[in-house]
Image 1 (tube, helix red, strand yellow):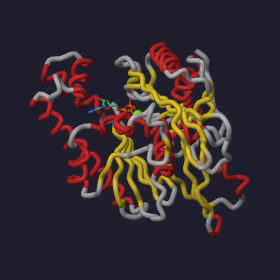
Image 2 (tube, helix red, strand yellow):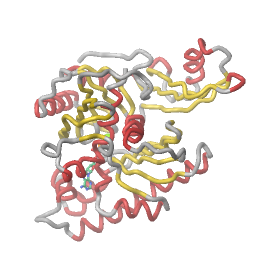
Image 3 (cartoon, helix red, strand yellow):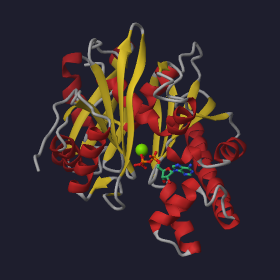
Length: 364
Ligand SMILES: Nc1ncnc2c1ncn2[C@@H]1O[C@H](COP(=O)(O)OP(=O)(O)OP(=O)(O)O)[C@@H](O)[C@H]1O
Ligand SMILES: [Mg+2]
């Protein structure tokens, strides 16, 4: 298993770089429950979806968003790459979880040449890990009067970063950029929801073992919150109440039984929807209390759990904000002979992160 580390500048996502025209760009999302791969091609001023694929990971391959079964993850990536006959091996992948710290910092920097040293030096006080155990990067947001400098710091435990990079490398791909799920969501949002409004928008990624809450305003990710609540919680409840295996509970939850859903499962879904909506409301309240940005105008739901029947409506009621499921294909053309409207609607929420990563891969 090859170790790897990143130089500063390879960890952060922003779309201010240069296009690499010509070939395709690939986003690889290693989620707790599945691998997702999106390949895009630049077409004039827009983008076209070339390939999209999902491959379910075996249970417990990723625990607490750390890779515990390297071989299973590598084999799953290889299988998915083979299934979609991916030619372009250079990918942008991402990390998330408690080993990742994202922090907006306001600094007094007299000389921009010293910015990196100053950011990394001041960052050490925010890190719950020893500075020698992390890889850090930053992005300059703005520089105002009197040397006032706003940056976003990203720090990740090097052991976790290495474990993701080595899985990608061992599956025969080249990780050209390691991004962060939050920024991938932002990139997917920016391209698909171009708007003249400078208001704040919240994007909530409801995954298998996490809920990521992001507020974007004026092209800047102004607030992030990551909690360890996800779709697995509902699957465990179904497993426990109906005495099923985890896999059977998952299948029942996502596909029903003979075209319908047992009442007992629907009741559990209802309870979980309310719990998730309350979690999201807490994040909204936390954001509002922080006075970091303007009022949130609307919520966009991403991630597999966004497809849970009734969830969007409950979130809208509890959160008190207009809520819709994200469409990462608003601004991306798709051949209807390959990708039907039904397929795109089904994969939309889980495609947000890999599409954002593919967009990031296009800029170097
Ligand atoms: N139709 C559906 N109804 C309810 N839940 C669903 C549905 N489809 C998928 N899910 C749930 O979505 C979750 C997977 O979502 P996603 O692929 O976004 O997670 P992930 O990226 O693997 O996890 P994470 O981001 O937390 O690491 C699973 O818990 C799955 O049960
Ligand atoms: Mg995910």
